[in-house]
Image (cartoon, rainbow, N blue to C red; front, top):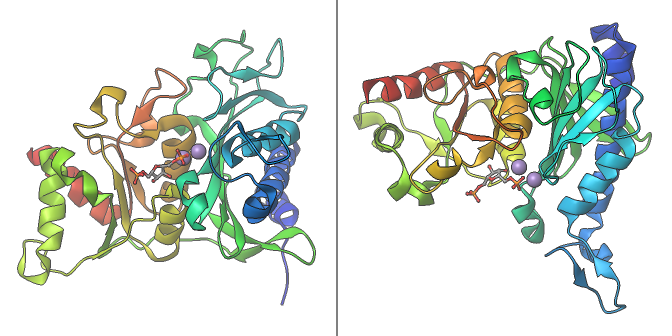
Length: 328
Ligand code: AHG
Ligand code: MN
Ligand code: MN
């Protein structure tokens, strides 16, 4: 069997050596984070941050450790202008005078971290844009919409460690090969089927949902006899990386809508380092990503920790959910 490494794959897909280097740096950070996640219980890093262990050493939760690893590995990349992390309030500028062509990397160092204590899949999500002009470091300078992403992806720390990536030419999946330490191409050209009979939503928020979301789920639950005319299955991992990975593998839709419980913040999931990168991956795999009323990638950012309604997955099913919103 021919093996393709991440580097060989990137050399086939892009002539931009700087982009290849920064993606390789991100993949290295993800391997180190995977190692810490696997050793979690032994390393005493599960649970709350800033607690002390029996030796009186400060323990840090894995969210913080993962962010530190990412900063250490990716933060020294020579073409990097700034890092924007879920775990850090301010933009982490790495250059005093960022130039056109420099990269901004948005990332969620550990997504789904509430699953760590119960040993379920978690991941790291990232999005890369390239500055179009020289800029002065400011919060506004990184408010760049999702259509400008040149690459996006995630690492998943599950039974195996995987890396799923798009540089704008489809989506490809890699598996970490422990013997060589390389990410090897295992799922070339991932495609999301246009239709599905599987949805993912946190149904405990039913009482908080807006009318269109409630009507859509009600109609799905009525099965073959209901208006959808087919039986639906349901999944919810409480880990966006794991839910999106399932959708990229076998289809489905994922919803984390704005509801009356999170409307004050604009929703739950974050635009720049959760919704945009996952939206790009899903679109590149033939699916769709929407807020319910428009394309996620076209949302104009107003802040780098902005939250947004997220509906993504199988193309035809996302269109059906948008119709429920239009009718309301
Ligand atoms: P994070 O761990 O980075 O804060 O993200 C958690 C997110 C996402 O991964 C998941 O889809 C969602 O929150 C789960 O939310 P509920 O706990 O409301 O189900
Ligand atoms: Mn997250
Ligand atoms: Mn996180």
